[in-house]
Image 1 (cartoon, helix red, strand yellow):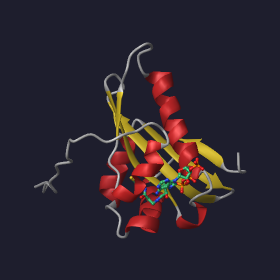
Image 2: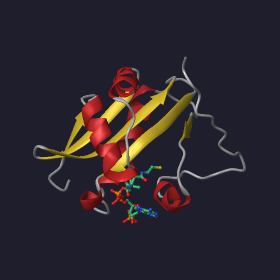
Image 3: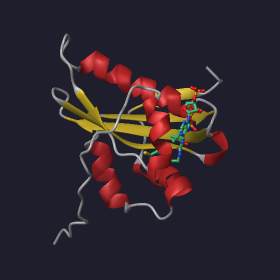
Image 4: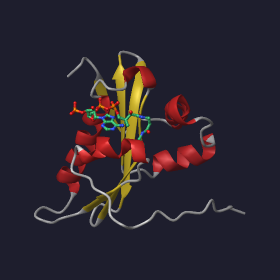
Length: 138
Ligand SMILES: CC(C)(COP(=O)(O)OP(=O)(O)OC[C@H]1O[C@@H](n2cnc3c(N)ncnc32)[C@H](O)[C@@H]1OP(=O)(O)O)[C@@H](O)C(=O)NCCC(=O)NCCS
């Protein structure tokens, strides 16, 4: 498996922000990210020796709904199957934890140029639109 190591539930807020900023620009605040890491169902990080090269996480209620968030591979490790490795791990987590014999919605949000990546795992889009608001916490 390409010499890389997967770590489970060890991803820290600092590592999350580092990877976020490798692809998306300025990351979220450490305080928000620490809370998010604490309340994430399942966190993955992928390492090449002591260098973190990928992350992904799963949120949800375990019974009816799982939501894949923040799938990131740092640019120089993209197109080397790291993303595939992480999605397969996330799907295995559902298989290990969901109610046996049931069908469960697994959702995510993808930019148009990333849809082909997720289609490889069986994801497809429907006519629903993503609605969102940047809500101010007083
Ligand atoms: C999208 C991303 C996670 C893919 O990870 P990756 O490690 O580069 O992808 P892999 O090498 O594991 O590719 C797995 C398969 O998907 C294909 N693939 C990868 N990126 C693709 C894309 N953007 N569109 C279509 N297919 C894609 C690969 O060709 C490969 O196909 P194969 O199995 O038939 O050979 C990575 O490019 C990334 O982190 N991008 C920046 C952050 C981002 O946008 N994340 C997604 C948030 S929705």
